[in-house]
Image (cartoon, rainbow, N blue to C red):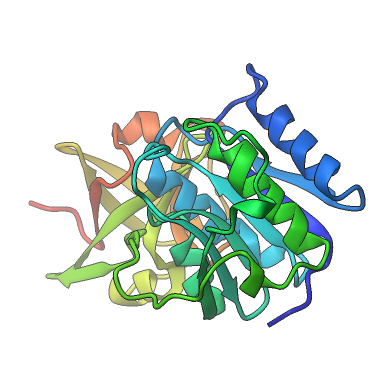
Length: 275
C-alpha cells in the first residue's frame, strides 16, 4: 500500500454551473488544508457510469503514486448502495459501489476494500442527496492527510461488489474484426475495444493500407496511418491512440458524425470491400 501523497483528484458528473464541485472542494480544504486538489473532469454525462469508469481508467495511471481519487457519479445516492474506499497497489479510490471505481482499481491491483461507515469522519448533518460533500469528500481529505484506511470502516471482500465492463474485446471473422465503441471524445474521435497492434494484425494490414468500416448500415473507407493528422482533411483514419487502442478519427472533422455511432455500438472493420 502506497503512502498518500496529498493529492486528491476529483471526477464527477456535476458540471460547473452549480455549487456542488465548489462545496466538495471546500470541505476537503476545511478538513485538511495541505491537500492539493486536481480536477479530472466534471463533464461526465449525467448518470453515465460507463463514461465515468472509462475516464477514471484512462486517467488514473498518470497521477503520482499515493493519489486519492474521489469519484462521484452517484445516481443511487440516498439508497442502500455501499460507500467504498478501495486501496490498490499505488492508489486510493473513493466513491459509491456502482462499478465506477473498479476498472481502474483492478487494473492497478486491488489490495483492500473498506466500507465507508464510521460517521465520526463525516460532515454533519449528512445530506441524503449529497454524499459527495458530506461523506466522500471528508474521507478523501482525511486519507490524504494520513488517516489509516482501517479507521473509515471494516474491510470487506470484493465478492458482491458491482463492477463495470468497459468493453475490451475483438471478434474476428472472414478478414474482418468486430469492435465495440468504448469512448467518444469531444472531437468525435471513436476509441475502440482492442489495442491497435492486435487489430491490424487480425486484418493482415499495416500503415498505409486501406480498410472498410461498417457502421450504422453504411460503409466508409478508412486509411491506416500513424496519426489522424497525416490524413487528408475530412478523411477517416484508423490509428493507434495514446492508450495504444485502435481509434477512428476524421482529420479536422468528427468520426462520430460521419459514422453515426454512440458509446457501446459495434463497428466492423474489414480488410477488403464487401461485394
